[in-house]
Length: 316
Image 1 (cartoon, rainbow, N blue to C red):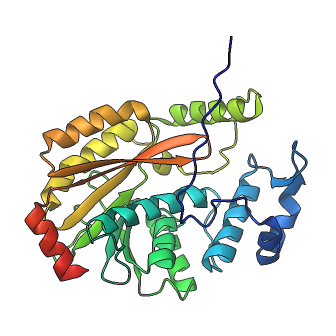
Image 2: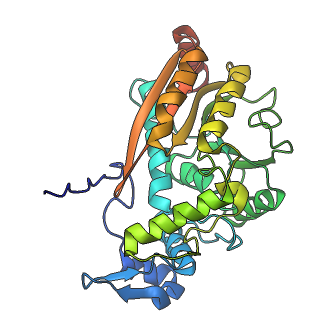
């Protein structure tokens, strides 16, 4: 019986980490990383991706060396995002904006993005500002995360005046209380909570450890950390996105593109049906692959073609 070879997916062509990390350069930019580099089974230098401290230091080094971010501090209990995958989302939505601008990606302060669930790491605003000089509004339901993200913004001159952090005081809402009357949002982005319960999150982590190492671990340490509300939502990813779609209709003229990651392939068909029922004028399903994982971005707009033209001409 033949064994099907697992498909490899490539990062976006503009992703700074499309090739192997330059560990020598990363060690210079972040000397503490040296303590977590080891020789892997292939005889090359790598880090222990099961060690949350090592993962966080690697990502700090990537942000410092490739993106010029010198200060990136947040509590270890918060989600530590893998930079290459997060950067891919930014590049793909840049392409989406470019498609609506005669192929030229709009850059600079004329573009305002809204990051739903920014988190303590402030990662999407960091990448969007450093890559395309966009402005960002970042929202979160956790006040500590908002304060931590604000500290990251204040500690890096390249981010100052370009990122606004807003606390979502009502967890039942996504856009209400965040988008103000004077705001015009060119594109939203979101990495929704993936799991429907804490136990579901633990099962996913155990499955990941087993797939990567072949070992069964009853209580694995999450190597990308993450406090519960970053990982868990009642009803999981599907319910969160359903709520987002329903609420987006109320802000249909305040935003050009709404987008979200959809991690679970099994959720995609239902989400696309929800968008059809919402009477969105245009819907996109954008494949996005990192290493062995295929994900996708779903984007939708309620603007008519005439309104899209007016938006582009007045803002970009």
